[in-house]
Length: 87
Image (cartoon, rainbow, N blue to C red):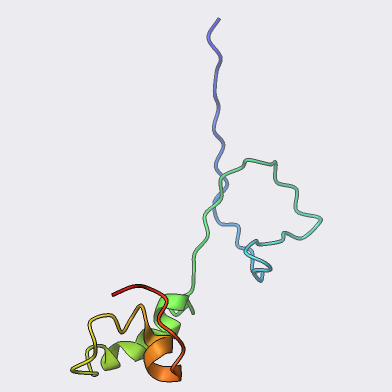
């Protein structure tokens, strides 16, 4: 006999929680089986590395006439330490 799969969906339940160490701890009284798929709705404005540092994009390309190896050897050009890579 083939295995039957029943899917039960509960809608309308809302839970507010705070993310801790990249996970969302649930209240102990809320029993949800491991592996249960849930949906997470994020607020419209959320801080991510991409938008936290996006302000720097306005400076992209601002420095002109830099040496070709400036990205790889910036410590040499800024602080005067010996170059790491051979030219």
